[in-house]
Image (cartoon, rainbow, N blue to C red):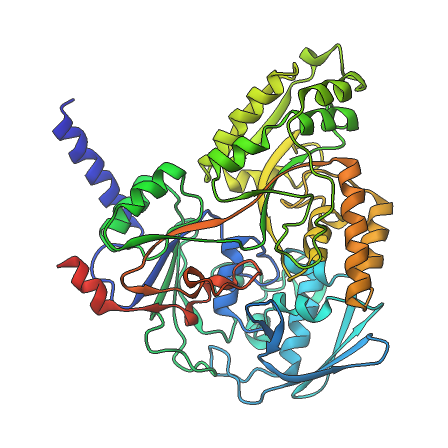
Length: 539
């Protein structure tokens, strides 16, 4: 086949993809971004990166984080708590309207919390078994905690308020939730019931989510905020590069390889933004499956890993992690033990393992995320490092959706699953809880399957501590405890990198104005898009 024909076919293929995603033609004032899929826009289901971004744009919350992660008034104009920190009372702003024009009232907040804790998916783990809710009047919501919960106010960043009447009108019966049938999950798979700055316009699953600006939003929105916000389900580097060069993409996903970022950076007007979002890259080791069920085997791998090459060569700009909490997150323990490559210590540990002498019978399977090409480089380095001490490694490329599914059961989870994970509220307890409590064992956030009741009790004790200094001291002890178990390879604190159209997009995160909570740096109402400047680049 001639080079001309190959180029023509490639061009036709890319054009076909762009047409299928509705990305060709004039853009207007659009913000188009790419993401690893799936995206769940149901506030009681979604919790990963892309889902969180969608929820933040479609729904309102009682409080909203500033750049320090501190809660500011939002739907709630004020609040107070009882002396024992068990009762929290929030006073709502009157006149806030859902997308269908009905008013957001206290009963909607109560319904949202009840639905989230009943379904128990997504961010439900933050509240299940901890809180009951009442709405004594139209604009007052009261949360009753079963025991004190120090970070409670900041966890409300994840309570997205749904329109009770709209959800109730779209409940299908029968379902697993009694009188609530399936609680509107089918409807909220592709529709929103929010009051946020954006509204769902189109959502062909596995392709893209198109949101349009809410013309009646209760807060001011800059006139240059995008009229449309499109989240596109692809991370394919050639597609991303083509879209960027055609000015049909404003911000690329964070999963582009080093080579792809270098190519994107060469496009006129495109820059690479980098910031530390409080995200860490983990190799989650299954502690209930041979051979990673043996602590000495796990420690041998921890000593054999070449962390320096990872942060210097594979993910430059990142820093080696110190335990389970990114160092930029409040409550991280800077003194926690940190492994480094030492083959002598690796062999000392391996010889204490019950599998030593039979290593050929127990290969280690690593599943890495197909949507993140650079993860393969880490996996191959890991394979090489482990070969140095006689451990056989099988590296498997797995789509993100399949990784979520396999982590849902202890017998389908492999030896190691790779993930990037971020805090759901701005302190160490967030990641400690979502990564290591028993309740999270059947989710994508914990392939370790620790099921450690003692650790659960330590975490519960820490998060119910009201005094911040005392709570952080308990977090520090928990981090030391987790390191002693060695359930995870703590590889690096990520510098998140995105190619973006610097000449016509004003993105606060690219200027260093970041919010240390997953998803909030993509709040569309704070991003400005200048179509006239885009038009100049297209001339």
